[in-house]
Amino acid sequence: MEEFAIRLNNVEDSYYSFIVAVLTYVKKKESRLKAVEGFMNENPNALTSDILEFISDQDDFFEDAAPARSEAS
Image (cartoon, rainbow, N blue to C red; front, side, top):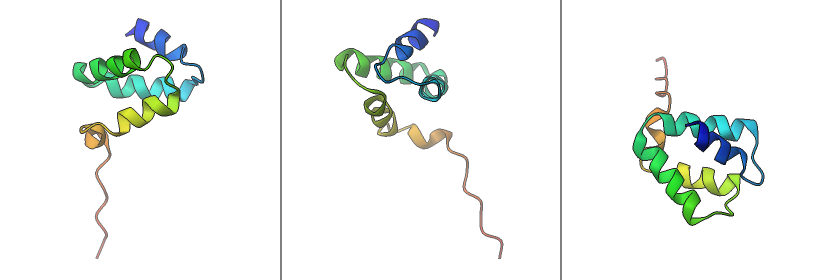
């Protein structure tokens, strides 16, 4: 995971919160790491917004979302 974090740090417009967010996402499942690495391999000049857009388009992106609070009647 350290090598992947270094790779994220080397994205042209990388910033701390981007690295933390992507690492948090990929640590949940190996398939997520492979998908993001694959995207980065196919798009070596991708910016942070491109990578985050790719992640947000994944079918499992919302699995980690906090459940919505139900309205009190």
